[in-house]
Length: 462
Image (cartoon, rainbow, N blue to C red; front, side, top):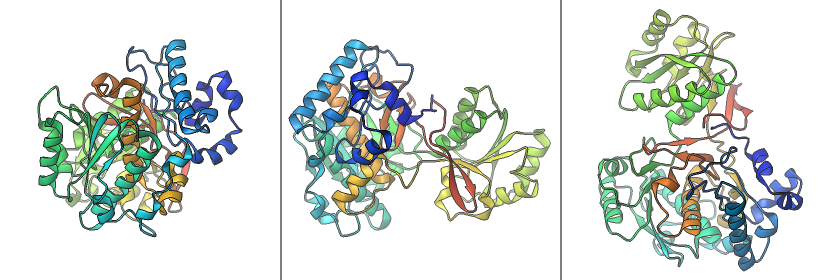
């Protein structure tokens, strides 16, 4: 289920002893950045069992405030007791605050680590589990800047969680898809890396998804708008995920008949499949999917909807790489959104300036201003505000450390990575599917007066 009330669930999952040590919620939230930055739950990795509540934090304030050695022992004891006393095997990856400190001097005053500093320190940690990470460190423009943000996120995760568990080798793809492909193929065929994090180049990632081979290490791909493939997992939020989560949230409020408008092309089937699956959980249906071409304007697709569907409850508008404005203008001329028809957008709308035509639409997306428990610590350490690039990189390195801790270097397999309960990271709750796609829980917003107004902290869907 994608509807997870994250913090309430964390409290509910705590043992009585843990609960007795937990400070009031507001106080705990204020203080937690000083110690633990992430708790991953590897649900039923060995037994195949699943808890009813799904993935949840298992924070133990006494353990995370302890000195380094004691914290490690407490985490191990907690994982052991969870395995013995519950059908769900859990792992709390915990660390003292001081481990992440002392690295701000290699960051710029108001931005990510410089290219020179990043390329001077491409091997982190001394653990027995080998991990390869492919990042566009020296790429020009925003691509390189985002790559270096991911580098900083990875460094924080190693300092917090992975230093003694992983040896992380970072390779510079230069933002070149061909070179990134060559590095990735070498990484998965070398027999050394247990998991590959990256690349962020879409073409290179798509190439990896086409390769066969059952013994290769899994790839946690960082490319935007990557649909996923067997053993090559899509990490970032996709438009299909956003559309499905938004549709599910509205279906959860009683809507039953949905229309999907999606740009014609290769991605349309992925969006359609995810939306239809999410609606089925609530007994709602996707009455029709209407592909459209941005060059046609919006009148035709809206006219087609009127001919094919009588009185839909909601219309989902995906936009791909283009603007949804033409379709939204045509819908507005028909009174949508209105009292009887809800308009649902996607995270891709937000890649452009907020348009007045967005008014009244609902959108499920990650909260760009809140990267979870790592945000304050990251800012204090690296002297700039983290974004989703930082959070995605942090989560994948932390997940690798969590798996290495709970199952050892050989634990990077489908049973662990594709467990139905999923994981909790700084980007929220997520899980990987057998086709390589990911599902995420995320906040749900309504556009009001040109701003995103929070409606629900977590959407529902898995």
